Image (cartoon, rainbow, N blue to C red; front, side):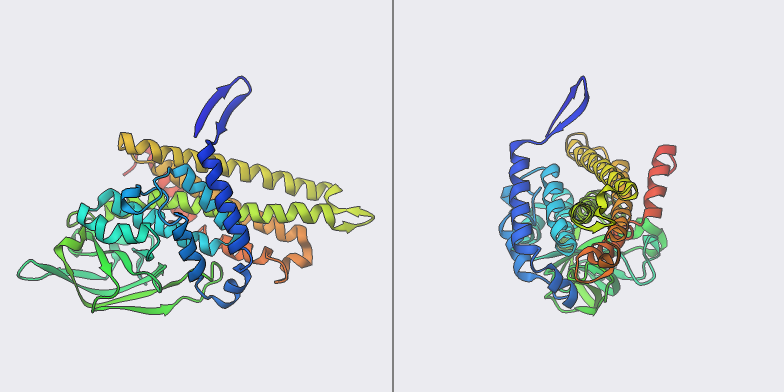
Length: 396
């Protein structure tokens, strides 16, 4: 991505490679995903065929080097592709986001070579699906209160894991899961350790599938551990390093959710443009009325501001590979503004459509339901404001 400062202002120019990924993702999203989105939203059925196709196209491991099964592209390409997929179906978008940002990104950054070969290659290539598990029934924003436990055996060869994790995206279909659990409860968040979980091993089981308001086609469930044995080589990082890994990975995850939210907002906005031009009332198209024009102007402005914050966060992540610096503030600002924009734009879109916007005959009500979760998962809007403010104030 080229950044040029001209007399008229800042100009962000996508490379030909970025344009190619946008066109490929848009074509796939509109031809393969959009037609089936209403069915999968209504039934809650996981879209396994199109998810596999996303893997074949390289969308499930966009930033992962080719040697580990990925497409070897940059964060801007990832954001662009995820935006286009989410415009067609936000449920497909979150499956792609979890796989890329939370699972693959963690293994690439913190995994050993053996772990990358065993757990990264098959997921980045789209052969199987990955998941990320931090939340528990009584532990959401406050990860230090988690009740699940991993206890090292006397011989020091493996950890025995017990407990329940909740709201695990991709869990019902995931082969491998990145798990965060307590190994030293008396140390609070410094006692959290990360493990790679093979869902086909004894001691692992899937719990109830969540009946969600939106992104209904994405599979979300509880997962249960009963004397699950994790060998030492399946620990990601060192003991007690889990919280650092979880928070570092969430920086990347928030870029993914910002891209998803942008896609949802764009879909609602584009539908509103068409409706405002075609729907007639009082002798002409409703787009001639100033109140409709005000909504269109504000929607467009917020969407473009979101895009700039998203690209700024993506560029910060790309710079961090060289500098090693965190991009927490940039990611949180992008996620906060994008998610609230998606919720606001979809609300305005329904208002523009009137009664038809409230009907399931049009996708507006799906966009509205899908948008809400972007303000909640991977850090609520309230948590994003805390993160941004503390970083600015220098509070730790």
